[in-house]
Length: 248
Ligand SMILES: Nc1ncnc2c1ncn2[C@@H]1O[C@H](COP(=O)(O)OP(=O)(O)O)[C@@H](O)[C@H]1O
Ligand SMILES: CC(C)(COP(=O)(O)O)[C@@H](O)C(=O)NCCC(=O)O
Ligand SMILES: [K+]
Image (cartoon, rainbow, N blue to C red):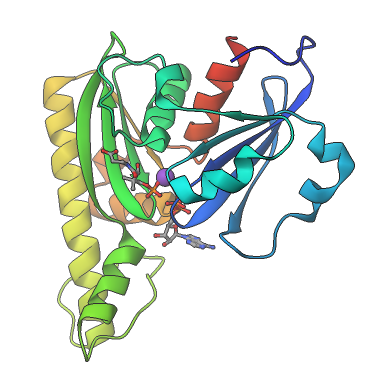
C-alpha cells in the first residue's frame, strides 16, 4: 500500500465488512476519532455521499466477497487483502478480519496473542512471539445459534440474549435456550483459554466483536479470576488496519 498522506494528522477511513454489519472508523493519522457500525443494505451513511468524504482515503477489508464489488469502485479505495498482513503461516482461506484482529491485538497488547471475536461467527485466532499464526477455531456466534434453533425447529422461538448470566437449570423454553447456548459457549471458550495459557503462559487474550460485552460479563460472573486476565477491545481490527496504513 502506498502512503497517500504525508502529514501524520491527515484523515482516513477504515471499513471492515462483516457478515452482520459494516464496521466503520475515522482516523486522523494514528488517532481514531470515531467508530460506528451500520446494517447491511440498511440506511447508508449520508456522510459518505458528501464530496468531502469521497476525497478521504478509504481502506476496505471484507469477509463478504459480494459486498466488495460495490466498494471497489468507490473513489480513493484501497482494498486490504491477506498478502499485506505481516503474519507468518497465514493459510489461503483465513478470514481477513481474523488476521487484522490478531495483528491489531499484537500491536497494542503484545505477543503471543489470542483473539476471541464474538461476531456472526465466534472465532479464536492465536499467534506467537514470532508473529506466526498458531491457528484457532470457528463456531456459530451467539445470535446465529439462537437463530438456527428457531429456524430448524417448530417450537423454539427466537429469543433475546440476557445481559446477565441466566440460571443454569431452566424451567421455561426461553431460559432453557439461553442457558444451553451461554453455558456451553462459555465452557468452550474457557477451555480454549486454558489450553492457550498452558502453551503460552505469558500469552495475552483479548475479546472483541459485537458480543464482546455480553461474553465478558458472563465470563466475570462464571470465572472472575480468568476475567481479570482477559482484555476487551472493540477496535482490534481497526488497530490492525492502522498498523498497515501507518507502516507504509
Ligand atoms: N445492533 C446490533 N446489530 C446486530 N448485531 C448486534 C448488534 N448489537 C450487538 N450485536 C451482536 O453482535 C454480533 C455480531 O457481531 P458483529 O461484530 O457485528 O458481527 P460481524 O463482524 O460478523 O458483522 C451478534 O451475535 C449480535 O448478538
Ligand atoms: C469466520 C468468519 C466467517 C468470521 O466472520 P464474522 O463473524 O466476523 O463476520 C470469517 O473470518 C471468514 O469468513 N473466515 C474464513 C475462514 C477462516 O478464517 O478459516
Ligand atoms: K468479526
